Image (cartoon, rainbow, N blue to C red):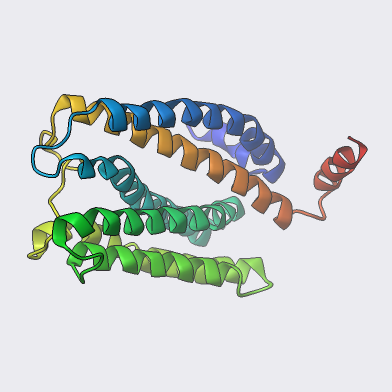
Length: 248
């Protein structure tokens, strides 16, 4: 059943597939993000309690959800690398870590900007905010370990162990608003029940979230290609690519 995946264990095949996929992902993101942002900023009605300040929701929530989703993806890739010795899985984890860190920073910054008019302060050691900050530290640790050793296999194992151990923080982030008394509002869209927002507010959020998701995928493919080239720099096919680029 999984035979169709076997060719992609070859770095050269995965590289060329990612190169072909990147422009499509970028184009979809370039369409969805502006549509979602313009819809959210110009056409969605103001919230009856928070007014127009709630519109940061359309950047903050996708960034926060993707920061967690990317980390789960890194943990899965790390587990695959450690158990099945899939070198490309480790390359994927290394490629995604900086992207996840950036989205975590965006989530923290937009959360602070949203919290200032609502709570009267930029920062409070709230359960949700604190666990999201811990996620940023985990990302920075994974990135540091990937770059701490010349031996990429050793670096991948060290970063992989931290990734897998750190994944326990993801449910803590998600359920922190239910487990502890917190200023942060409860889940609005990431829950099993009906979303706690009107359809006219939900649709632009979904478009924004999909747009940023495709953007992450495009960045991930681009960084994955860079990782593959760096880890296979002595292979003939990489040298052939370099020679072809020099001739252009």
